[in-house]
Amino acid sequence: MSLQQDTTKLTDPRTGLVRQEIPVSGARLVVGAVARARRAQPAWAALTPARRSRLLLRLAESIEDHADAFVAAERAGTGKPEAEARGEVEQSADVLRFFAGALRTGNSPAAGHLLPGRESWVRWEPLGVVAAIVPWNYPLLMTAWRAAPALAAGNTVVVKPAETTPDSAVILGQYCDEILGPGVVTVVPGDRETGRLLVDTRVDAVAFTGSAAGGLDVVRRAGLRRVSLELGGNGPAVVLPDADEDTYEALVRACTYNAGQSCASPARVITLRENYTEVVEGLAKAMAVRSAGTDFGPLNNPDQVARYDRILASSAAGIRHVADITTQSDETRGYWRPGQILADLPSQDPAVHEEIFGPVLTVQAAAGHDEAVRMANGVPQALGASVWSTSMDTALALAGSLDAGEVWVNCHLEQTPELPHGGRRGSGHGTDLSVLALSDYQRPKTVTVRALGPER
Image (cartoon, rainbow, N blue to C red; front, top):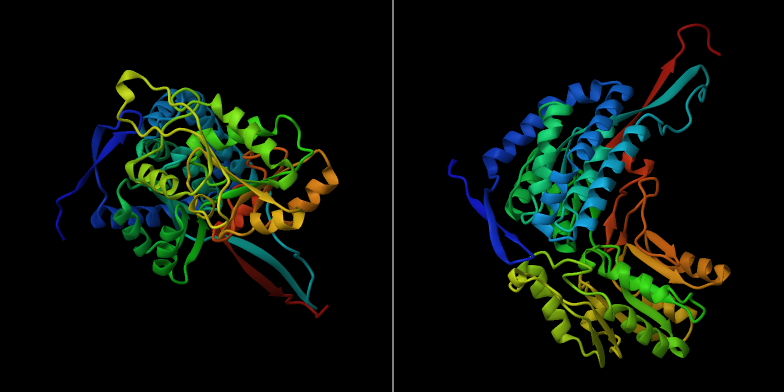
């Protein structure tokens, strides 16, 4: 095995310029990282819940104490505005705090005297070593979403950050070594091949957030091992004629947050024919005052730029409202793309059926509520969706009909660690956030004991 280590160049998406060059973790380093995690796992799992909780709380405090460094790392790899990056660093610490508490609550089913002369209970045991492969759109936050419940459940974690955004995960790994102990969290920066090598090693489970193609590759490689997948959205937003006047601004803000590079972002606005023109004009007016470079950041990398450009160029939209780009003099080569509203679209238009993953909203008209639901559910993904109406009875009925793991009413893209997040169908399976996420990283063992005295 060659010991020569490849490197990869990291680019600042704001300028398009190379910002640094880092080593790529090859087979030797990946295998070593998993072995290190394997050695550390028994001692980590053996800690009492109180002790494990206390260490996770210390890690959360460390993120908060060094927030400026994490914010700078997030911005270097993603180009996010400072307010977005700082908010996501705070959320990452909050996720760790939540799971530090959740691990002490217990989630066992019925236990006790369930069989004649027997006592039974359930032990929840960690899986072992979890490979967490996280994306570039929320580098630190997605690492927390995946690693926090896995650690809370008693597993050790090997994190493979996205090739373009390893910065914050590398910093987090250093604090994990210091606070949680060597090997409890190990970070292996690298490219897609690094991720494939990690899945192919002797890990016990894989938590993957990324593209559908990447998720399918993980499933093929993982075989019978536990896999949790979050694979994208292309989310619908059903806007009814009685929607509140702030609907358009709220949808555009959600769509342009993180330059639209959020799996649960609104992407497809569906309204009724009687309200179609008003919705298109309302969204166009709201988008006109949202500027790339001022209100949101760039796309992340050349592949994402090419995806945006290809889908927009192939779209047959009859109406296009394109917003501004406002950048600095040194950002002209960056990966900036404007917000857009696309309307008068064919039913099978690429902009509707492919996830653009950018600051773009399509608008379609439906004949009635039933057709609106069919259109909303008519793409492979089923992650997030929203309904906008001042009639709660109507809105809740539609929310129940939408095939999505998370549905908002009169809001979109609002989340908290207490509530589960996960997809259906082409958006994958498994749960991020909430106490339900713990079960993705544990396995139950039923223990039944026969009383040694007289049969009862």
